[in-house]
Amino acid sequence: MTTLHEVVSETLPRLQAIQEGQAARQPAPDVWSAKQVLGHLIDSACNNHARWARMATQNDLSFPTWDQNAWMDVQDWQGRPWTEILALWHAYNLHLTRLAALLAPVALIHRARVGTLNGGEPMTLAELLRHYQRHLLHHLSQIWERTGG
Image (cartoon, rainbow, N blue to C red):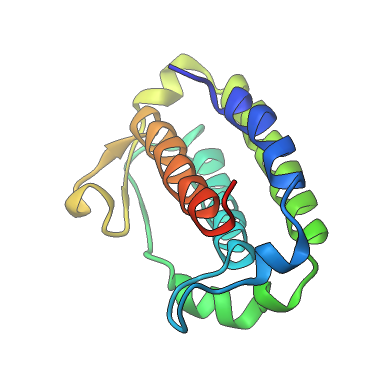
């Protein structure tokens, strides 16, 4: 399986090749642009950063669901420059790759309820790490579809 670090490193040049106009184009009024998708991935990184750091040292936690559309609206990802969004996405995900590499094996079995993920049932930190990467890849594929990348 490809590591998160490999995904981030291999994806960066493709994202850098996307022009501002391509990144800003919304396919339909209620469909996110590439800017908004990458902004959502930053929001996801932020939420998962807190989860991973807490789960590294604590077990049996519970994390709330976050309102992704409200976060989208309040941060105005659409109105920000693509290069700024991209730099933040890259830096945050590099940080997460380092955090993931530092996690003690015993921490990977710590469990938490994470909003509605896993049907609301507890999941291990290892499962949450895998979910994050699947989520990232899913949304990156949306960016490629929307920009021709």
